[in-house]
Image (tube, rainbow, N blue to C red):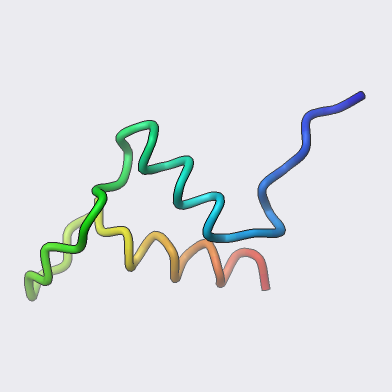
Length: 50
């Protein structure tokens, strides 16, 4: 059939981004948070899913 979307599980979305190299594995905890931060990516994915 069709490809299953990962929209239902934000953690799966972030895991996929980490594997593809778009997001870092660990947060660097720097004040000006970088674009590759996994914490921010997870927050964005959760907001998109809700």
